[in-house]
Image (cartoon, rainbow, N blue to C red):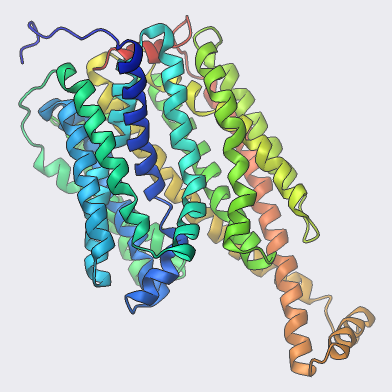
Length: 519
């Protein structure tokens, strides 16, 4: 398709736009859901397939590694094959891989199929964003982003809740089987509506060296992050080796991609202030958000006596205010400086995390629920304006590459945030435990009273000491969680000046308007 003959199709109208939005949003929700739905099912999967829970974590790792590799390839693949064809093919292959995952008879087979599932899922999120924006006129681009953001932010929270319910009430293969009808309907709807709106294609050469380097550094980074805590981080030769491979491959990758004629990843996008500022702010904020999303239910289940379902119910309302407010943000982002919205979001995130840093082991469900509901307000004002800033001023033909690269940075930051949050939590808990133990001495009157209470309850001396140690553990991990929450709140405050270094186009959704013409 030559550049001269290509005419960008007009926005969709009426029911076509509505059903197009539903199809794209369903595919996105299914994709994002799969990044977290298997987490709570790991014990059941490992037990059924006869492996240890630690080996079962590769079900998560293999998906994350393959997905992280595929996402930044979206720009090159969409130019080579077309956005619509690539999106529909990704959805159908994702459905096939999901069905195969449910049928996997062994753990190695499941891990391999999860890697396939993660790789074919890569282009779905950035392309759904690009196609959705192309369906709306520039004036409604903010509304389109609101629809897209709701699925991206709510799905990670719903994943563990839905996965736990399915595992408890059905069986773990159904966490994969539920993708089949959703994916088939999404692919059918997207093809019917968008097939006549295929994007311009070019036969670009394959940057084999860049692709190989990309695979090496992403795989080594993801494996280092996922295995670090299990192997005591850099006290392990394996983790050190992975770190060295990552650093060398990443450095060579940067040099190669910046000098290649047809790079597999368009790193020159980072020369734009809005793009690097918006991508950095989005990535760090999402890493903080996702790390705390993982930490809160862990603390509730391990040290507050919550079941998986109860922990899911307490964290699920985080999406309530986001669903209510996101359409309002979408309609007004063209009229308000998006930096103001992002500043408000970061201040609200800071408030939420500060409130959590005041938790104690006496916190009831209502106390835990209040900041969770408020966090939904921050989520609504976070993603849409930041995406608008990031894509501001980028030409339509570069939107898929920009969206893929920024989403890749966000996904990677989420993995880093999870590893950092859980590692810091455990390290700080060890420190607090050592400090608390100094006050728990046999000569202490308070210690003797506590041990006497446990002995009166029928425990022997060893059992009473073990129970007292459990109480110390509970307090130590509570104090450690407070530290993580407080530090996260401070980091959100430090992100605010970064947002104001960007200069989004006046008139509001400059990036959204550019993205609206991406198709």
